[in-house]
Image (tube, rainbow, N blue to C red; front, side):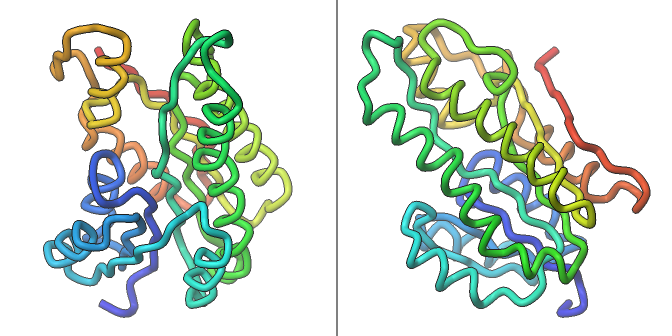
Length: 225
């Protein structure tokens, strides 16, 4: 088991992140990143070779300490995120800061801290973006802006680190707790049949990670049928 490649998945305690951890576990040792240590430990018990990696991504000191323990990293999946919505009129500075803190700054800092480990493995960075990272809509400004920034980050990283593979994945609406909160904020009725399943997003990650060495899947777009 120890000779398997190492993957780190943030936001692994639930939703898309947990689905990605399940998808990678048969072929990787998985570090399960997240805030909820109990949930991560429970998931690790179900995934042989995985390990809970509880850390607050917005705490630079804690993040640096945790990242320093990683010597070689084959896959880094940024799945943690928040979706703070609001119109330009309604959303104050805190809404914008909160979205950028988690969806951009934490992604950039964790990548920066693990770059030596990623370079050592000629690794792969996967950023779970959003349809909002390609087209902004009314009432979604703070979140969409953070996802546009995450897209720019991934593009810059790809250009700067040619030895790495960097993939942005843009799922449409997905059946998660976050989506339930969004639909509630929009005042709609929640129907999971209208949305992607987290497993479907995880399969897109697996496709990118398992592509043959000469194939670089830079951008993947998923939409509910």
